[in-house]
Length: 172
Ligand code: GDP
Ligand code: MG
Image (cartoon, rainbow, N blue to C red; front, side):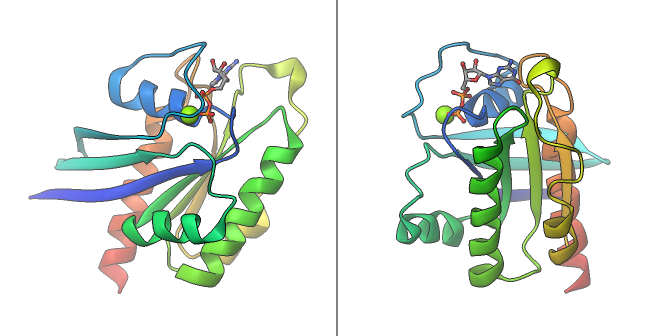
């Protein structure tokens, strides 16, 4: 049995969306990745004994325009919402995207909240639990603190999104 899902990675510019996707799909990290690049990556892996293929849309951040965000959302069924643990304004952006998703797609949408750059310990200004209210409002949500740079929790975050998709699909 195999599974194919289309997901999107959303969040403010500079939080590490592209590096998370690069790390997950190619085990690479770039210090100077072009912030305007929006691309789609396909990757396959085995998870819990099943073959999984993911098509991942790495967005560039112009989704301030809600009609554009709407288009991203319609074509994808689950989301990674990425903020930087070192920048509170990026958490606000993720919260507003989460609210938009909640209002337009509903509480059953699988979501992973990703606080990235956990390696920058001295610069972290966002506490654990900052997204807990959102986690509780969505039925299939979880949060991770990651470092794309040092490959901490990156796989775990993507894998958990797939497991949440399975759980949601089983229950509906
Ligand atoms: P995007 O705009 O969200 O796609 O962000 P990028 O992936 O282009 O990353 C923006 C900047 O943050 C780049 O300079 C990356 O090297 C850096 N970066 C990304 N992830 C991490 C991380 O986990 N730790 C650290 N220290 N820097 C990171
Ligand atoms: Mg990018």
